[in-house]
Length: 70
Image (cartoon, rainbow, N blue to C red; front, top):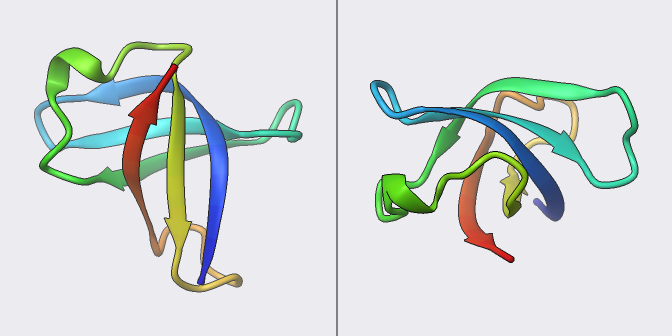
């Protein structure tokens, strides 16, 4: 399990998923990642920093966004 810093690129409030760019990854985007339901929709603004927990290093879809911060 790893905790990584990323930048929020987009957020889908309908199914609570997001597209992110991992810090240090210039053109690598991960799409349709789950977002913790305790994060307010109003906080999910493009460009904000997010904390992401990766449960499986070999499967980037097995991750969840757990925090948003500035």
